[in-house]
Every structure is written in C-alpha cells, then in structure tokens.
Image (cartoon, rainbow, N blue to C red):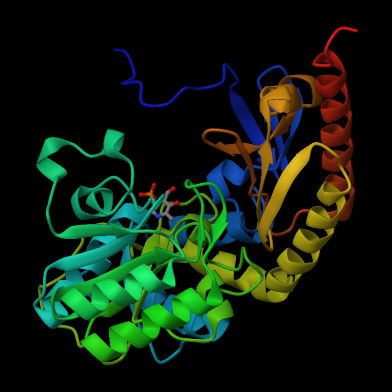
Length: 386
Ligand SMILES: Cc1ncc(COP(=O)(O)O)c(C=O)c1O
C-alpha cells in the first residue's frame, strides 16, 4: 500500500535521536534546529521523559475518561504551577487543531454566538473550524467554508476596533497566535493583544490565545501572549507539550463553566500522554528551560544579525525567523545536505528556527558557523559575472 502523500519530504530516514541531535540509518548525525516542527521542547528522548513513559507503560497506558485518572490531576497541578495560571481549568485532547476546534466551539457554547475573528496569515489547524480560521484557501475544502469566520489584518488596531464597533455584538471569539509560525514568524504586538482583551471584555467575546506553536516556554514566557500582560479566556497548547508524544489541551478561564457532555474525547488525557506531558513540565522546571530559551534565543538572534545577507531577523526566545532573499533561496537545503542541519521554512522565503529549549551554546555555535559558511558560498556563487 502506498502512503497518502501530503508533504514534500526529504529522502532521509531518522532512526535515533538525543537532545538536539538526530541520526539517519547510515549513521550520519544531524543538528536539529527545527525541533520536528517546534515539537521537541526538552530535547529528543530526554532520559527523564523516557523513564516516565516507560514506568507508566508498565502500569497502565489507557483507560477511558469515565473514571478518575490521577495522573491528569497531577498534570493539571503542574501546568497551573509552571504556566502561572492555576486558577484556570484544563481540558485535554490530542492535537493542536483539536485544541483550537474545542476552544472555538466552547466560546460559542459560552456566548451563544457564531462569529469568529481570525487574522491574515493565521494557521490554526486542519479540522473544520480550525481550518476555516486558517488563512490559506488551499487547506479549506468546500465543506469547511463558512461565513462565520472573518479575517482581519494582523496587528491592525484601527480595523479591529472598527469591526467591533460595527459587529461587536455578534462576535463569539477572536483567535490569534502570539507569534505566527506557519505564517512566517510574525510577532503579535503587545498593544494589539491588549486591544483584543479590551474589545472582548466590552462586547462579551472570548479571547482565544493559540499557543500551539509559540507556547510551552518557547518564547521565554510560558505563553508568548503573556508578554502583553493581559489574560486570555482560553489558551490552546500542543506541540511542545509532549515533546513528541501526542498530547494537547486547553486552559479555560474560571468564568467559563463546564456543562456535562459539551466537550468530550476518547484518547485525550490518557495515562501515557499525561506521563509524557508531566515529564516535560518537570524538566522545564528543573532545568529552568524558559529562562534558557530566552538567553539562548537572544544569543542566537545577536549572532544571526552579524551575518550579512540575512534580513529581518525576528521572533522571541527560540522561535526565530529571518528572510532569505533570492540569492539564498537554497540556504535550507544547503544547511541540510552540506552541513547536516535541519531548519524549518515558511513560504515563500522565511527560514524558521525552532530548536529544543535545551539547545546548548556549542550547538548554537555550530549552527551559526554552518549558516555563515553557507551564506558566504551561496553569495559567492550568485555574484554577477564581471
Ligand atoms: C499555531 C498553530 N495552531 C494549530 C496547529 C495545528 O496543530 P496540529 O498539527 O497538532 O493539529 C499548528 C500546527 O502547526 C500551529 O502552528
């Protein structure tokens, strides 16, 4: 049977991983500055994470949500502590799209309204409402099309305010990434998030902070939205949460009260997923990884700024992007094939860096040297002939 092809993939087969290193089947070692798409938060196969999952597996891996699952409560406590939002409620599910889908639905249950505001270049996932709130027509099937989602320009205060003035009473929720990932590493302005908070309060709408990619400590704060200093009503999270084990969730503000059976899930919050997620939080705390993400990210950005040819270096913590112009169009492939370094991209010409929060200074130096040499070579090759 053939695999159903949905991505353009590299002809590389990864068979082993540790920290920020990957190995293919020939034994070649790679440096991972892509983090498997922002998923690897504490480092590949962290020994504590492996131990926690193995220990849990030996006891029980799954039972349905019809019984009390103590490890869910342990996870909720740890999440409250590390995120600083211990007064929120936790709903567990399995993926980022599912988290956003549930958030949008919960907002609509809460205020009985239908309109969703999303922003230009947003990506919120592939399921029906999440994809309808994603600003890419290629991902939206006819069955997902809905009049309920309105896209407004990202970071445009006036347009947002004007929209609320005209239609505020119909808005159920506003969903926004604190730093757009797929859209190309675009940071939401703090004043823009503050305005969303203010307008949601004024008009009874729900502010949903999509922290699927930019959350879980990657920005140097638990949610990158926290930089704005105003709370969201619902935070969604996924990628870094399990360090590769599928687990996702919603943090729900106390004023949104649960009603039995409105939300539900078979696999969400299973024992194994909770063990993986707990291990991640324990390592984040023990190794002080949020602070580390901030320091390492600042160092990486400073170094990137010294490389001429890289433009518009931006981001926060270890969620960093820069523009590679035409001359550097093959930079990502060069880094991979000639320097064994994985990076991410956002079309058309953005390189995205999403390494583990535990990336070391030495690994960063190796990465910078690879970028510097690649840029020099590509620039040289693309000089006009005299
Ligand atoms: C901001 C954001 N939200 C939602 C998603 C969807 O997550 P998943 O692929 O786990 O469904 C992604 C995935 O890239 C994302 O970056």
